[in-house]
Picture: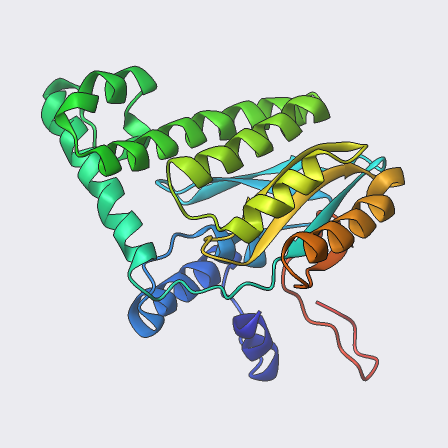
Length: 264
């Protein structure tokens, strides 16, 4: 969003959305010292109304996936727990995933495993006893999450909302148990949401260690879901408030002029 604003202020042209996103990734790595991936920047720079993005982090390409069923909505719920990625935990996950990929590459030299995406569930299970238990769990999460993304992609093409939502909830369990980036507050929000009528699935979103959940729900039940989340979260956390808002798949960062100029 900041890059888009600066482009408008200084009349910067001929910078592609991909180039802008990758420049922002570099800023995170070099200036903020966060070893992040490309997802957030790609979403902000390249998303269009009514679509999600299927991102290939190796080739840095992406594909638009329709998410425009008028009967559904997404409820984002902020746990209001502090969200911090510049401490040791997030960089540790990066190192642990690399360690898992290195162990798999050593175990299977003929498979040309460079990243965890190159390995299968069978590969990591075969290697389990030779890996540090924590490194194994990190690798298991990434490998199974990649499988879930592929399944979610197929489910979205078929508008199989039940399957898509179930994958969201299973993903949260893996983020909680294997990647260990959830928090009690996020787990509670997912637990509350998944018991509500009309909910297809729920999971934490973002880098973890605080922050938000996202819940896929039938639109007609969205208001009731929000009411339940706000009430039960407060009751079960000793008075803490969560913040909910209703949203859908929308356009990424763009300029909205307040003086009558057309938006870009």
